[in-house]
Length: 128
Image (cartoon, rainbow, N blue to C red; front, side, top):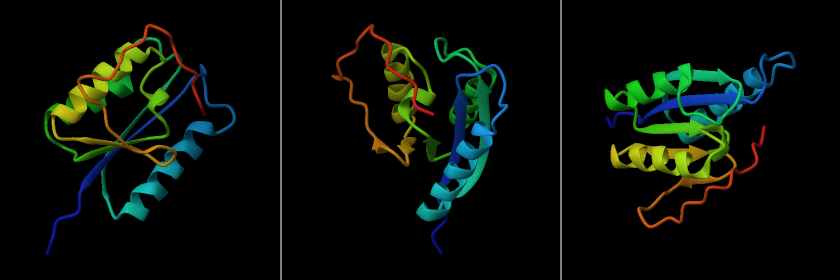
């Protein structure tokens, strides 16, 4: 019997608190997406607040789990969940891909970042 692929769910909203339950909705959407893909959820982490830095508690948990080989995929709402700086986001996405981990989003499907992807200093919009 083939072992299910392991997914890590990462959620972030750009707000100091989740007064409208947006983070909970985002996590449910990712759980549903994992179920649709037939994945085992290996773990979850989340952050509240700005995506201008990649030094956030939930993202640090994700990076540690990735380095420990605890997942095959990372599910995110959109690429902007990782960060608002295109350069930082692409760099982290490349690192995740180099570990053999696939980055996926219900909105964008599988996200592939190649080493020749053009980096921009411009931040991009955060979609919730």
